[in-house]
Length: 157
Image (cartoon, rainbow, N blue to C red; front, top):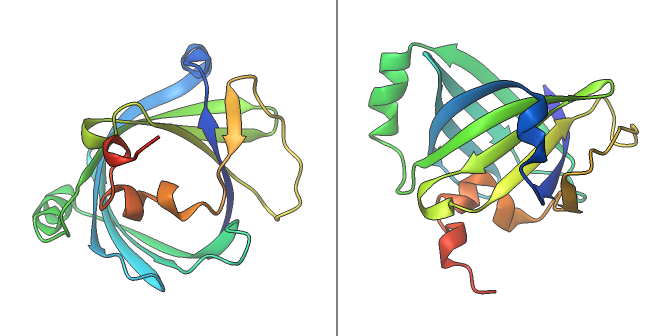
């Protein structure tokens, strides 16, 4: 139940040619407390309830618990979420022994593209595709819970 992941900005859309899948996601947060977040997600025809704990110092790992729920239940719970429901398209891309999930954000986060990779341990090596840019692991402003409250379109350069 410990999630270990690293996150990166994406510098081109070259990942799309290698995508294994593409799916629309809507998600909102019932709670965005710094110690824990409670997320509701609709991905395809499925709903999910997810609880995430506080990240470790490097931002690479944290507790995560997720349970599939009925899509109609997720739709009802999204109505109760804090302001700022996120809309994004997720692409899954094979890269060596790993799969990257690339999220292309829409709405107020349009223009932001983030790739993440889940690892077995914090020091695990992995193949870095050419389309990866700067690493943003642990940068709180890129957490989905923060993007729902402080969208990318409102950031100042």
